[in-house]
Structure formats: structure tokens, C-alpha cells
Image (cartoon, rainbow, N blue to C red; front, top):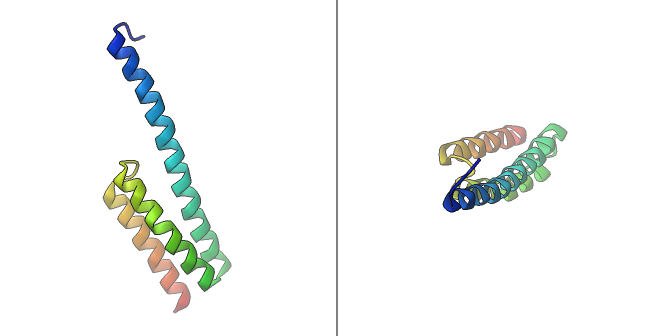
Length: 88
């Protein structure tokens, strides 16, 4: 348990940041899930549109530090490849 005032404040800040980061991570997962569902359904237009919406959301999570930038790039790249393969 924190003893000093600064340590108590730090735990409050950490709790707030954790909540925000969880929300962001969950939001990103939702966007990714929508793209994957569209790919599974085989609808090219819906999948492309879902990817178009998901991409900035994934990059935003990376810029906020929720995801590593390489992880975000890899996720976008793999989703884009799957959508492209769907149209081919």
C-alpha cells in the first residue's frame, strides 16, 4: 500500500490511464473484429470499407502508446493483404 502522498497520487493516475488504455484497446479489437467478420462473409466492399475505418483507429492506438507502432503496422498490413486476397 502506498504511504506517501505522491505514491497515492501515482496509483490514482495509473488507475485512470489503465482504464483509458483498456477502452482504447477494446475499441481497436472491435474494429479488427469487424474487418475479420467482413472477410469471413466474403463481402469485398464491406471488408474494404471496414479496413478503411479500422486503419486510422489502429494507428491512433499506436500513437497513444496502447500498441507498439510495429504491431499496429503488422496488423494493418495483414488485414490489408487478406482483403486484397479476397478481391483476387
